[in-house]
Image (cartoon, rainbow, N blue to C red; front, side, top):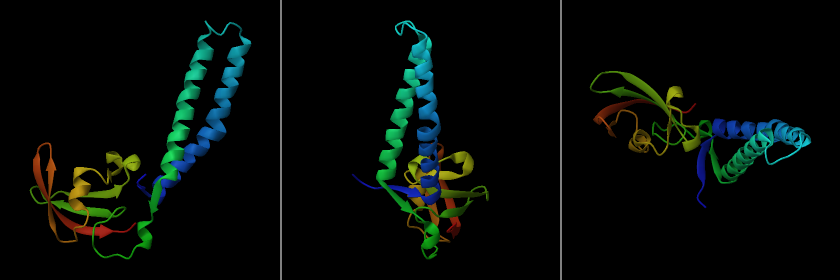
Length: 158
């Protein structure tokens, strides 16, 4: 099984979600199932079936998170010497050469990506175009609306 790259923050978020699922959600669901059982006939008990369905989702998510954490390769970019090169975990300031608009993205793992937070997956077209390039280089990113040229203004290890 190949390692799943993940930032320190991404690992912390997954561990917090796992802890919440195991210590809060799982006991709540077990309690809801117990209460629904007390109501009698389980065949026609909607509360029981809803609680069992929630249990299935919660247990599935717990297994998924545990699997991801077991295969995670946590990369703390702050411990890597700054070289001006774009690598996993770095925050990159870009200048769109057509519009002079400045944008900033952090390159993160698939589970951490969130465009609203300016975090792009390492497997996204923009990240794939940037990885390995250095400050001052111009990269061409293929988007659904055509190719866009960006200049790498600054690479930061945050």
